[in-house]
Image (cartoon, rainbow, N blue to C red; front, side, top):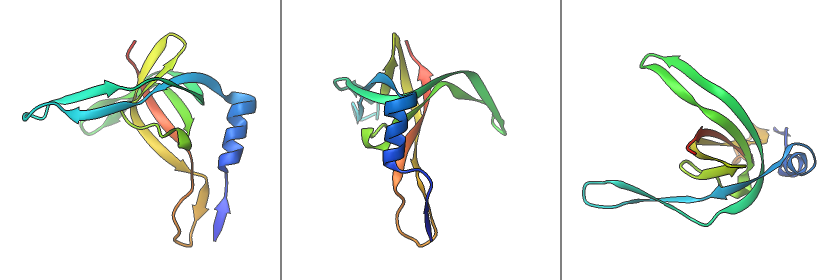
Length: 128
């Protein structure tokens, strides 16, 4: 049985008509710079996207390793925008780095076919 909870059209309509905010997405590519494995991040040209953005207070989770930092903000972006870890999102004068990006399906599926992703939930850290 497949039950649709939220479609791509529904999410796009919510962003366009009610809760969306214009922001810039800067795709970041990652490469290894030398034989020691040093990481180099390169920014691409910014593109304008519409997403839901929420500034949060600094949060911490407790685990066996100690306290883990959770992030400064959350963004819900369209799945089609392909936001991934290390990308940057600029809102107003503040720039955030995507620490985690989770693709969220809009369908509960028990028949074994692949999920249909609707949006990407992003955990953001303030960098400027």
